Amino acid sequence: MPSLPIDTPTGPFTLIEEASQIVQTHWRNGPAPTDSAPPTDLLAQAAAQVQAYFNGSRQSFDLPLRVTGSDFQQKICSLMLAIPFGDTRTYGDLAKDISAPPQAVGQACGGNPIPLIIPCHRILSAKGLGGFSGGTGLETKIQLLRHEGAAGLLI
Image 1 (cartoon, rainbow, N blue to C red):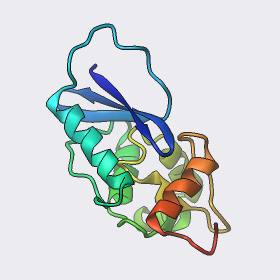
Image 2 (image 1 turned 60 degrees about the vertical axis):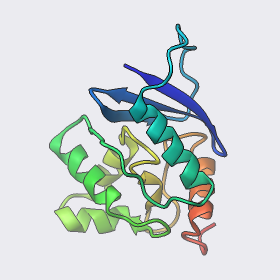
Image 3 (image 1 turned 30 degrees about the horizontal axis):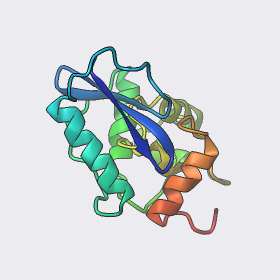
Image 4 (image 1 turned 45 degrees about the vertical axis):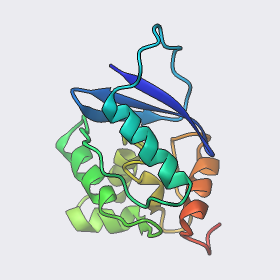
């Protein structure tokens, strides 16, 4: 699968493409490329959108995505995609939307295969920040929420 590591204010971030769709992102260095092939058009476009997000000129992403996982995982990712830049919701809010336990929602958020682009960082617990499995954990979540001006009372 083609991938493209990029530098971001939250650390090294890798975009992964399969069949002309973004299928995964993560905050860890991937293996060094074995060739010097240029990134695919989609990976270049995704990298440009991520950089625009971090420089403040983009608040949402317009990329073809494919969420692998259960129907429940896909439903939770769809709900997260609908949360606008700078807004937050709680695990309980999403749970009510689909009549599911908040813990299951939290697990699905933690299993989001495309963090940042699918904004799982915008989901909080009822009593605080909740968890975050990307980057350096809560530190990365706090950086993203601060960048978006969200949840100012919590951080």
